[in-house]
Structure formats: structure tokens, C-alpha cells
Image 1 (cartoon, rainbow, N blue to C red):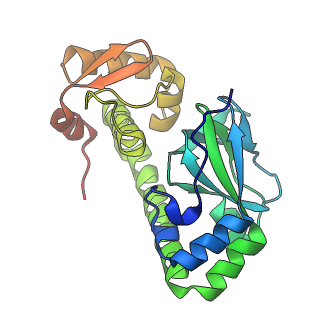
Image 2 (cartoon, one colour):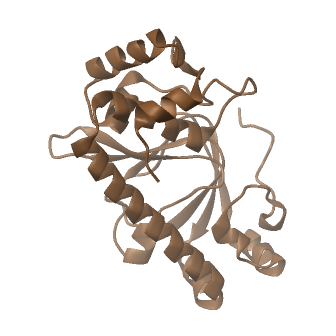
Length: 235
């Protein structure tokens, strides 16, 4: 059964997205006329790698995993997305097929905007164009940092950083400590660029050090400052 909280008109949306915040209320109302709202059940594919890019996707509610197929045929997690995030923009701007597969981690509502409308807005709104350039710059910065992390950080540092990425993407539950996402050890291993076995051992070590607690797929961060130190994150 679909959830009852359907996406509102764009001018009433409370999701914090810098891209669409650059639009006027009138432009947002026009956007609402053209967009579609699609419901994706947990595990559904939103778009596939190699598929022709026709739409921009904005996550109204839900959790999304983006994966890319490696040379060995194994899917590797590229990133995650949650409410307010947009998907598919790099492929639209580069006029290329989608470079990853997007999968719903839980029941999700996605607003869909056509490629034509997306470009029409960009052409008429310089501020939105600037916001997109800034977003692309952040993407490049993150990709470069991930490459450095894989080659220079220890497994423990990478696993700790993966947990922080999950926290920054999905936040906590009401208790302020439990990650607001349930994710497999294999997915965490993908994020950290290591094996599932090494990830399980590292999570157990972080648990022993009283930095996190494990409850099935739920992960509770009991000492965020120590986790940040473990991740060896530098500005």
C-alpha cells in the first residue's frame, strides 16, 4: 500500500535543496505542473546504468542506493541519496546514459522532471545554473577524496568514515544515536572499499571500544567524537 503523504506542490515542499531554492515561487509552481510523482517499493530500480537519461529525479521521501557495475561484474556502491537529493543530473548535463543504477532502500516517493523542462529552467535561471556548478564541484571533490581514502587510509578509518557518511546522509532516529537506515555489512564494505569479513571484524572492534553498538542491521553511534577521530577526517 502506498503511503498517504503524497509529494506537495514544489512551492510548498519543505525539503532543503539548494538547487530548487534558487527558483522563485512562480517558477516552482510551473515546475509542479510538469513534474510527475512516482512511488517505488523497497528494492525497486528507479533507473539503470546504461539507460538513456531522460529525466531528473528528486527524492521527496525515501532512501536510495546508487551502484555501478565493476569489471568483475560486481556492483559497487557509488553513493546514497535521501530526501531533498537529486539524481541523474550529471548524465543529463553530459548528454550520456545514466552512469549508475538507483535502487530504493525503502518505500520511496520520487518527483520526476523531464530533461526538456530541466534545461528550460537552467537557461532562464542563472542562479540555478550556479548552484548546479557548485554541486558538480562538490561531487568532484568527494570523488578525489574517496580515491585518496582508498589508497591511504586503514580499513578501520574507512569503515568509520562510511558510518559517518551514513549519518550525514540519513541522520539519526529520534534517540539521536541510531542511524536512520538499516544497511547490510556487505554494503558498508562496498563503501569502505574492503571485504565483508574485514568490515564485520572492524565493526566488532568499534563495538568493543564503545564507539558504536550493533543491533542486527541497526547501528548505534554512542561516541560520535571518537568515531570522527577514528575516521581521521581532515578539512
